Length: 279
Image (cartoon, rainbow, N blue to C red):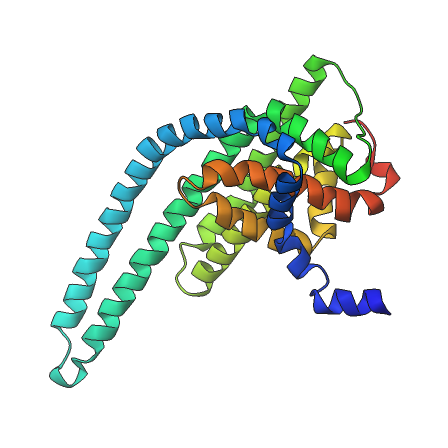
């Protein structure tokens, strides 16, 4: 009865999933030796961030400025043709302009943080793997690894990235097309793109302990779905953390650590045995 009440109060994992970055931070505090495993990834993230924020963010900002100018011209035409008795709408339209500007900036920061994560997690994989192993040992008392040769390991890593790209294309292209239709299409595109981004982020941060068990990509994707709503709130919080410039240099390793704790607590105890099949 007590477990059921706790589940209800916790939104059936909603609040629990969102709390894992904080749990990871507390784990680092209790085990200071873990910090050495994120020193190199932070340096890698710093180098990648310089390239991304100096390039992608710069060109993205140019696009945002271009859209802002188009919006400003459009709003000027609207306010110029307003009758005198509707002049109060000018303030509302100006407010709408600033809201749209804010949304465009948020989208730009989220997109840049997402790309930084893809490169950062990939380049920092050896160190993140060691960190994940140490965390799993702390959490469960053991580390389970299905050993394979280096060629197979590299092949799985490349295949994983390709399958993510296929998933993004299969889901993202229809969403992009639907965004061309104002109204409902725009809403579907925005919400769908957000869900897709959160799913990819969840996959990346949960991957280390799952990959040690050599699970197939479809099983990893299934795990994200089976762990809802906790995996959704976990992904949303991580997406928010990696979208903050400079702060994300540290929060990316933190999210990798929180993903391992999430898997140890919520996935491994209920992981179907038939998932343990080599690709």
